[in-house]
Amino acid sequence: MHGIIFAELKNFIDQKWDKGLWQQVLNDAGLGARLYLAIADYPDEEIYAIVNAGCRRTGMEPTAFLEAFGENIVPPLLRTYAGLIKPEWKTLDFLEYTENNFHRFVTKKHGAHPPKLVATRPGKDEVVINYSSHRRMCAFASGIAKAVARHYQETVTVSHLSCMHRGDAVCLISVKLV
Image 1: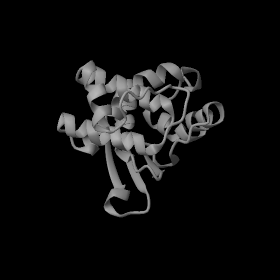
Image 2: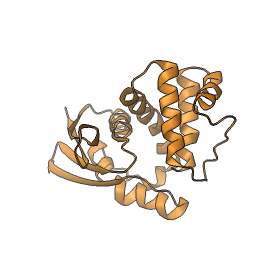
Image 3: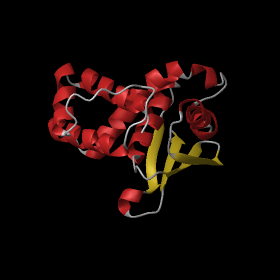
Image 4: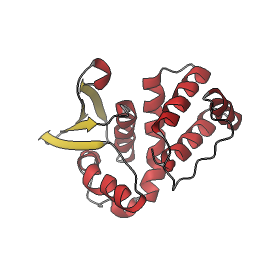
């Protein structure tokens, strides 16, 4: 997993709880004084260990924790990748073009390995995202969708039509404008 995710996870924990919690979470995860650089790549097992330790420390369920983290990561990512965002876009456009714009860019420029997203527009007020990743962090994607809608001052409902956590091969995430 790319270091920017770890760096933003630290920021999320620091902002939502307190700065001392990050080190406690790292210790609980068996990672000690691990330092994450935004430009490096790290084993996926470390993100799982940190999320699980964070859930134990905060009392949050993993789905809620990842969704909240997804919502928290959007503002800094919007600032970082503002040049890739077309001014005429709204929530559903942003989500529809994530794979071809943002994921392609971070893969090429930073060597990141984001999840594979295939977005379709079954109607003008809905996008369905086929989320495919061995990481199974679809709740993180749901949080991102909600925060993108908030950024565009739109209201959406996010539902999982299918989910790897329920035994399905992929997650199908429906995002509908309300």
